[in-house]
Length: 397
Length: 173
Image 1: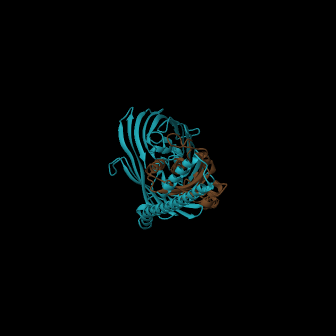
Image 2: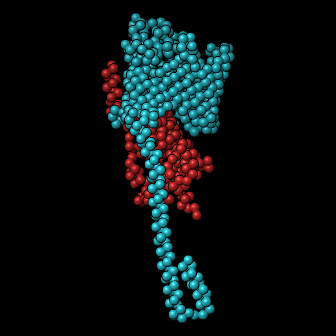
Image 3: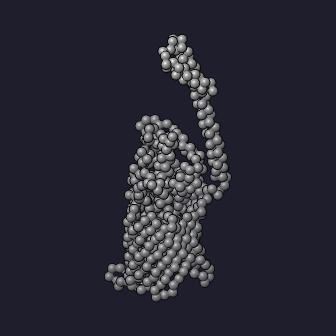
């Protein structure tokens, strides 16, 4: 108020004096009034600066109080409750298979739960529990399976060990098979029959990096027990598994170039029949694959082959098994992708009569969101004629 | 035979590179980001700006403010974002609404650590937000590190957004 009066006086004075040259006394009065005005404005400015600083201090204190409330409660929970160190995830898929020369089928193919627990920065527990085909039990089509259950231990700065039951480091789908991550309603036959995915064993696996983007895995674990000469039926799934003969699996994987993965795995078991045959059946699996995913184009290519050294396997024509597939794809948008796949499985190689099977698939994935996908495809079995049109829904979380 | 394989495996193990660890300290990251000493600023969030950040991170964001470093038109942000199960600490430097540097300061998961290597990180150079407030550049993923890649992309988006908000706050009347 005082400053307004001073300012008004100055304006009035200057207006009046504008008409005539002021005297020295009048000028001195103007200067004194201006000086008083400046001092008053400086005092106001200082007071305002103090108020701003006080407001800032109050706001900071309030923010710290609010943040400490929810961070303290989080800290207490993390310290005292397992719930915050335990996570749940999973995936699932339902399929509708319209078979050309056979019965159509609707199937709740998989319902999978992950339960993981973080004990400390160096020790974690991972597990995967699965129900297949909805109903398990005597006479029911489904299975309840423990697919993974292992402790991951960072026992030294650069070293990790997985101890327990884990997925073997082979193939593309064996470790990563959530339905939103691959094309096609059903998983490809090559990895199913030849690798044979999904394949888990119990043992110890060391993992790490040899160089930037060059990773290794080396595992010693329970092995197959192949009866009836079919590799896929030899998976014991750690269910009171016969362990007279262990197996060894190693993998080198290159991922240094974004979007590209190159991988090679080798497995050796000295007797995949676990002593049930006259002679031991030593077996080696070699698998290699390449995966590329660009902004628009993608490609998957995989080759896998078994060599089994045993007279009975040879007599049965089951001592060699190889398969390969190539799968180009195109992302039309963030939500839509098209794919085509050619698969070839040959249970007999070299100069033996061929019983190879070929299959051609073509289809589309439509992602409702990055983790929920609708699928449709047509599979054309070029030899056996069991062609089918498949629809599916899949999710992961 | 088994002992030889184990011996070879142990040789690989001893030569292995770390997935988990602190790869760059905050001080080193800030010193690299600025040629002159930056000021430490505070970005206060209101409901609107918090909602924008929550959209960028695709989760709730409870903090009332975000501290950042600034000198001239360049800002640096250090944000934490969960990959599969554990947080990744990422530093992002922004200037002229574009990313000029991105660094993984600390990685805590046992797999997916390839995101810290230059071949992956360099993809973010010059990335900005388009009209839909998403990254303008396609970022190639890494097989087996999908969730970590996604976390880094969310951090990059959030840092660009925070820079935009901080600059708008300064220049708004």
